[in-house]
Image 1: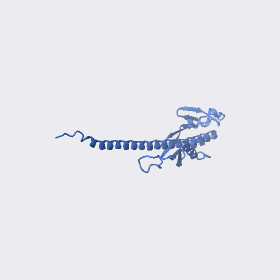
Image 2: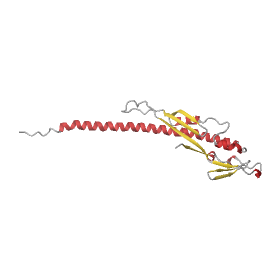
Image 3: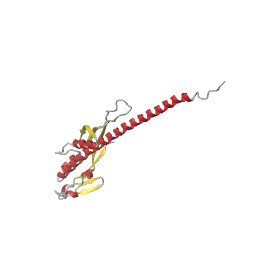
Image 4: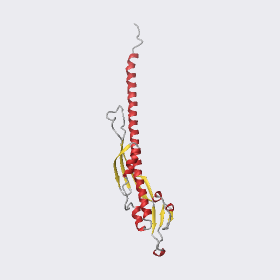
Length: 198
């Protein structure tokens, strides 16, 4: 009786093809997930930048209002709480920064000291093996908050008419005078902190 020397070789080839095909599918699937993650990260970066830009614009406006009312300390606290007359809306800065990050603002909610921005990427995820993702775009939102860094105490009644309160901002003290030049006054970043909400 002659012994067969080749029987199992032909059966292994279809298994090999199946395994290689499966590995290729997984590779493409991981690539698609990576594409989506990169697109999502881009959206989050754009949202963060847009929210911070709007809050920083508001900080500049509030600091300007404080300088204008330097001689009227009765208005300081309102300004530090975000209540200042003549302050324009700041969401336009969110739109500007989103565009620079290849995204567009879907919604910008503006509070006195808080901005929440939702953006959508301009570019879709792109072609992948996952059906329906070719034209799908990523969305993300971020909230930026403005915190006043300063406190002050009114001087004693007998201190003199032109004596301004001492301003204390995170351990730094300013003994302000009515005739102080602009460069001697606290800067916007001294008066207010801007950060993303946790």
